[in-house]
Length: 211
Image 1 (tube, rainbow, N blue to C red):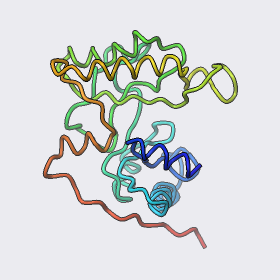
Image 2 (image 1 turned 120 degrees about the vertical axis):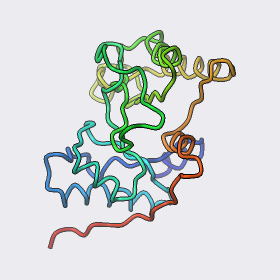
Image 3 (image 1 turned 180 degrees about the vertical axis):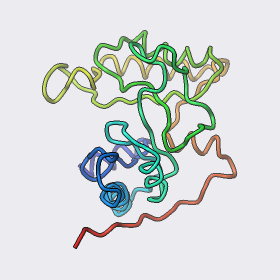
Image 4 (image 1 turned 30 degrees about the vertical axis):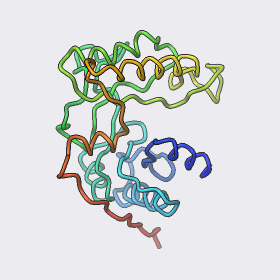
């Protein structure tokens, strides 16, 4: 609900875009794809948010869709699966670059699943730390229990127990200056690597429905 969103934002989280109705943008007409991205951003803005970051439904995008995300006023857009994960992409890089080569397809591990262990989550952080640093974008789609139900699918969920254990460890780990690790929102990281070149906010625009 909007009240949930307000509570989440008040705790320091960023509210970003994800389209109006969660469609695969690559397979649809470009005008409809633009409507999905731009109108979603305009709605979030009308609710009092300032959306600067976007996540592609199903992590599916091509050059055309990336250009639409930029045209709708976003600073970045995120994919999935292009950074080493516990059970996939073993030859992939261990973190996204800072700054990223393509800010409109940010590289990230697979979305966290119920079979990921606490040790594996920690390893995503420490592997990047030991591999020269970078940006590890973690995607927690559902935080729920019991896992395996329609509302809590195993391939896109993590239990509150594992999640809380991980964020508690991460808070302790990042508090130690020698670990050189910070926890930020997407936009917070963009502000970090852009510095004085961070762009001004672009007001949202809408795309009218077809006549």
